[in-house]
Length: 423
Image (cartoon, rainbow, N blue to C red; front, top):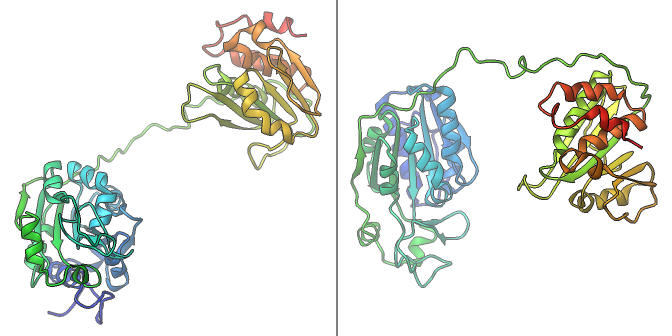
């Protein structure tokens, strides 16, 4: 039978490698299904099998190690067309690295066929054992033989809910069995057992493939054959805009700021630093300024520092953040600890420090104020930025008071009274 989906000529595998048999039999199986080559999308993984890409006339996508099934899932969901045949080539190493992707895709029954090239070791990187290496099987890096039993991938994928799952011996003509899997709707997996001629054969002299498979207790059979309809992506024709619901900030105020002002506020997580920076930024926009805001906090979110870099400018701003702010505001010990490296970089500007904190080692003027004492821990960040706007004449205090009055923070404090308490 002539090739239709593969280019003519030698395939790029070692002599005797089962990958060649798989590729050629996939070509034959696709011919049985009479698919247009451009209706076939082949997604390959990292591994020896993956160098087949250039030999196929179909669409090909080369993925990262263990991620080919995830890529194929995205393709399947975006195409939303079971008549487009998505095939994944993956090795035993990639299959175990990306096991969660296999399980999820089988469980959701995404339209694709996974062809698992199981030569029971990592062939591309020197013959290390994989999670599918059978008990006693020897590899170059495990010459004494595997001391544990590899798990049964067919059992796992069948239990996850795949439409069709089977295991084949990588010997002879397996095109008809591959065609059955390729013709199924939904998720199908074919595990093809093979031996790596460069590592497995040399490490296990005299051992035969059938012997390995039988001793491992891996059944050559169909594990699942269900008449499932493949996953169908729900297409929404009308979706609400994520932008339209945002209220336009009207410019009701003016600012006398003539050049960019770089501000960094640092405090503790849970004390409203990011919200305060947001109100400050909106107030600046309402005063006709351009603004950028970049928040920073640890992955724990609710503990540790919380910091925000803000830039105000009468001109367009082409970046966010600054290694050396003009104004540094610190409202808590967490904020101070986080800001020490930035303070070290400051050669000019001002530091506004809560009076409860020790003065850091710096040549920059430090102004100590009772942000926490006057406004409380939860309002110290907003209070400090309100202070900065007024005393550095960045924009009118009324702009920020208006933003606060329109928010859920309106009743949290008497902001107008707090303004009168500013030194």
